[in-house]
Image (tube, rainbow, N blue to C red):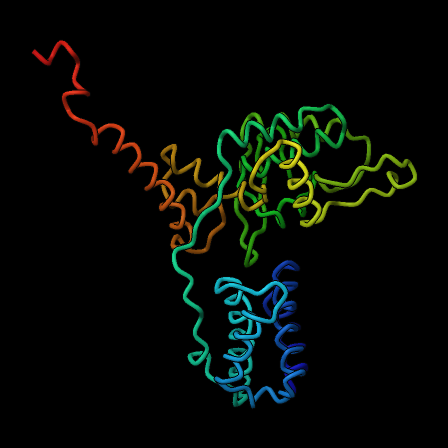
Length: 312
């Protein structure tokens, strides 16, 4: 079987047999089509001819010739998709390389990037206007930070799914898992203000707004890329030195919960992680905060910390 045909069959299986989300399907299609294109250029046609050396050459291609060159974490996404394809083919009794021979790159400890409280205040100040787009952008920022939603979940959200009375809704996350999502009082107020300011009948919560009336009658929902661009523009407007992304706001949500006493299992459920091991990446951030607190209160001379009345 050719690699191209194998990729098509696997993607069909993911879509029909596994019911993967459109977002996951797009990612798998991108990773596997990239491998297929590289293999074609390398004159590697038959999927059963893929060997360990080919995998290493593909990794080298991603690390040195890809634009831009990819680091270990990014390369692993391609390898994970490739391993999934080969696992599917081996279940069909194809004579393909064992996935045990395709180890993932070592990446080291993942560093969490989250928005600070000061930057959050400056970001909020940058969207203090009363135009409809200001209200929308303010609702996007507050909703992401208040709920920890993935950007794909945010743009798929529909108005009839959100209870403005209860301040909650359900989303279908990765793997089709449904989880409850809760809005803070502030986020609920801002989101309600945005929705009540709209006169359209578009079912989606977050949509495009045009100044041109002809275009405005054709409102469409925002895409994940649109939200990323909005946050990038807001960060520049706020004068922030570091970019703001949907995932950075999600990280901020999780870190804020843990630093204020939430337990790991609760945060796991709110983020929609399938494993608590994924959520544990945030403990390194909170551990650092604990270490700083310990240093403030215990790494000083005990005499300096005593009440003067007790020093006699």
